Image (tube, rainbow, N blue to C red; front, side, top):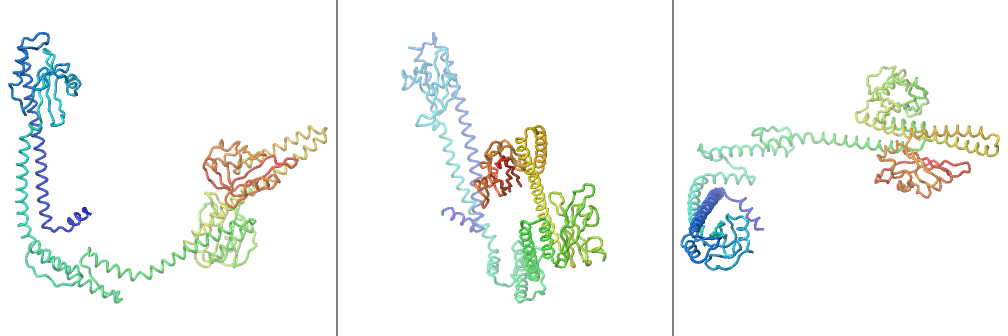
Length: 616
């Protein structure tokens, strides 16, 4: 709360008070910086001077000790008295205290501690370790700067302690004088800045009052002020604002009354309000047009989304290829309001003569029973299949519909030919003719439908191939079982039967190898344990085969919601029934949903021998 008040005060501070505050703050900061810097310099100078005097004092004492005729470090009697007299006769900086302490910690000469021992004290340990130097510490009452030096002749340290409070007493006295000087300068700065700003701000009050009226939305008269100073320039600018407000108010009234043809000239290119009013006028003019455009775009989006959903449902219908193709082309022609349409599928059964077969055609709301084949590169349909790109033409000869397109009846105004393409692989072509023209969004819509149709055709082909291969494998297995029975009944034909069995096994192996190269496949043994998984599936899952081999399939996958459960699935497989369901691969945290077809392979006793799973 306090900080909010302080912030509010500074936000609402007048110019005069702002200048005062700036002057005072500037003086305080400058004197503060100078004072701190001066204090640091003086503090260092005094400390360096004290250190030099202490070094000289100790050197003087050491020189005197040389003349005491001391033998083997023993200083007693007269020599001790002379040393005491020498120490106490000197005046040390900061009223320092000098004394002598032996290496073993005994105070040899001290005003109050003679005979005591300080061997365990931190300062003595520091003396013994360094032999010579300065040591600063706090004795609980004051900070002490201690200089010491070892004298080998007496095996003792000469020590001088100086109290920093006495050493820096003069420096503290100087600080008081500096603070007094700063206060005087601040008072003078405040008085001078007040006099100067009062003279500067007096004429600005006139302008302020008029601006206050303008801020309340009032139109005021021009201000009379005939001086060429800064205030005069402000008055001229303010008068321009007054004139501009009057013009703007008149133009705004015209817009309010619906006069969108009213003329208005902004004060300048940067006149935000004036240019905004002009923009608002243009916006009002364009509003209805934009609204119509928005409705049209929204209608297009709804049309596309509805169409995608519609054809998605159609492509999920379980029907034959011919029925599904007719359902797609008939609904697509009607949905586009076209007149004719044909769906061609890719036929590569003859590698030397690859062609496109017309599977379904629809024209004038009727099913057409046409039988047409178009070679790759022949006409627009064949060209579309080779180039794998859509073709849209609007300039069509009268004979095109009968000669080139193969749809017949009448010449259209536009023809759209779209490849059924999935991952750069073409499965067929859609050709649609219209008496009108196809919009861009309609052409893009047909291309999306083409991708969906290609995906469906791809899946259907894979499933048909898988079904054919599995049927053939089942037939071969049954034949093998019959021949095995025959071998048991007729031992004389054992050798011939074995050779036939081997041939059958090779054929089955070839079939399974073909399946393995074509579709994603998993093999289970009779207990439900995974015995084999092909590379197509492991690559699709992005996992290593080692995580699946010898694992129960119920650990690897789980049924999707609404799909057949594992128990019912296995019961169906034991009965020899093929089952297709949606399931989720949960091994190794993959969580990938797939469609799997379980194909049971039974032995001659009609018992489950193994299961082939085809994954889509």
